[in-house]
Image (cartoon, rainbow, N blue to C red; front, side, top):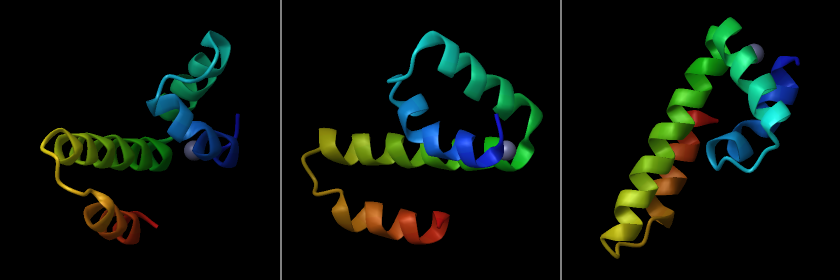
Length: 72
Ligand SMILES: [Zn+2]
């Protein structure tokens, strides 16, 4: 798996919406590739924040936009 393939699947990986084989591929790449692991950690943090906001009933779109700007 290369970085592009990994980044494409990162969102699905975070949501555990991949097959076991794909999960293994992404996990293996993240272990070998610090830049992708960094992106993964940022995305995971963003998802956690958005989830916290949702749970509290606050609209997350503003926060999500800010985070997306930082990430991309
Ligand atoms: Zn990579």
